[in-house]
Every structure is written in structure tokens, then in C-alpha cells.
Amino acid sequence: MPAPEITIIGVGGLGNSLARALSAAEIPIKSIFNRTADKAQDLADELDISISGSFPSNDYELGNLIFITVSDSAINNIAQRLAVILEDFNNNIFVHCSGNESASLLKVLESKGGSIACLHPLQTFTKQSSASDFEDIYFSLQGDTSAFPQLKEIAQKLGADTLEVTEDQKSHLHAAAVMASNYLNTLLDAAVETAAVSDLAPEEAKKALMPLVKTTLQNIEVQSFEEALSGPIKRGDIPTVKHHLDLLKSQPELLTLYRILGLRTVKNARKNQRIDQDTAKKMLNILE
Image 1: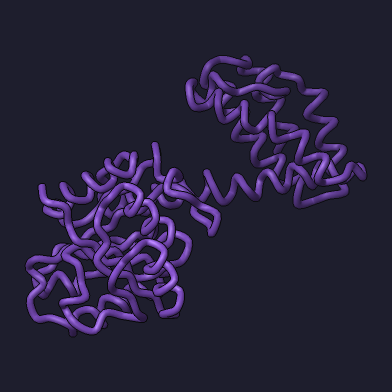
Image 2 (image 1 turned 180 degrees about the horizontal axis):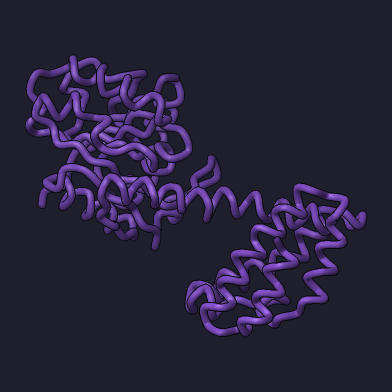
């Protein structure tokens, strides 16, 4: 399969990282655009890309595979603006990278013959991200199946895997990703705050908790959630849980979070018969 010529529109955290990763994998990038043209120009100079600007003005400036890596709210507008460039997009594949939106957001381009898809990386990207951040991750892939072979090949060259999903599965997977990534961040912040209630310095609490977090993630990776579970609920240690609830009475938000997560943890502990039914019932009663 011949390598596609690629255009990237939007060089925020993801677009920037994607351009660098594609370049590192020796996948040709024809052009790069950004609302702030200077940012596109800087990245184009760095990666030796010949065409850049604020937006493509004609079909010559477009590759046959166009990645739209802008915010969700801007995708439709970008699609509408692209649609006026050419009457026939039969040779083009248009891909947005939103986790929440389906490929149908690009239907105006599909109506002109283009193939449309969504390739969403299940990874978080910042200004500090590197090409290696694509290695061993998954992209959810949804939309026109005729576009899938090229997108799968690109993912493979980046060291990533793909997971084909329906529109409904894509939305649920994105909600799951928010819980696993963004809310994990929030949960760890709450954990540090819980330790800091006793006047322990937050930076010291974070430093002490991080090895525990890393080991937990490593255990979850090779075991089921139930098998990797540890702590007082798994042990049926009701006095310890009661003590924690007492400690957090002065912090209603942290107390509520502890209760909600505790209730879910009791259910996990019961799945593998880690605690008996009577202990589970007592634990649920004090957490509720």
C-alpha cells in the first residue's frame, strides 16, 4: 500500500505530537496548518514540511489523508471550510481525532465523495509529549471502513494498536477513558488532600503515594481488578473503614468520595469471594 501524503490541521497537544511521531516514523507530511499560522510555520520548519499556513487555500496544498486535530467544537467548521475547496474528494480520506464525536461530524465531506473516519488515541498529550507516547497505545477507529487499512497501517508504524468500534461503543469508550485518566488525576489529588488534612505536606504525601499507585497499576495490568484488589475492604477490616469515615467527617466532599468508591470496592471484593456475604453486608451498611 503506497504511503499517503498527509495534511494536519491543528497543532495543539495532539496535532503537534502526531506530526512529530509521523515524521519520526518516516511517514511523509505534505502540509500543516493552524489557526495561528506562526505555530504551523515553526513546526513545519522543524520537521522540514514544505507547506504551512493558517488554512489550506486549494487542493494542491492538501494531502490525500487529512487529519483534523482541533477541538471538538471546531471540527464541523473546519469540515465546512474544507468542503468549498474542491467539488470531488474521491481520492481523499478525512479523519478527526475526537474521542466524543463520531465520524459523521464530517458528513459534508462524505457528500462530496470523501471517506470519513475517526481515529482517537487513548492517550493523553501535552506540550512535553514525544513520538514514543504513541507506542503500545490503542486508537479507537470508527467510520468508513474503506479508510481503515491506511489508518491501521499508520497506527502500526507508530507502534500502536487499533480497536474498531461502533458509534455507540466509541462514546462509551471515551467516557471510560475520562474516568481512567482525567478522573484518576482527580482521585489522586483527593488522596493527597486526604493525607494533608493532618497537616502532612501535600508534596510529601504525593511522593509517598506514587510508588503505591505505580505498583497498583502494574498489578492491574497483569491481573483482574478483583485479583489485584488490596486493602481493608478486601480483608473485611470493618474497624479500619469505620475509623477512616470518622477521620473524614470534617471533610464532606472527601467523605462522600470515600463512601462511593468503598461501595464499589465491596462489590469487587465479593466477585472473587474475597469477603463473605455477611461481612459485605456490614461493610455496605457503614458505607451507605
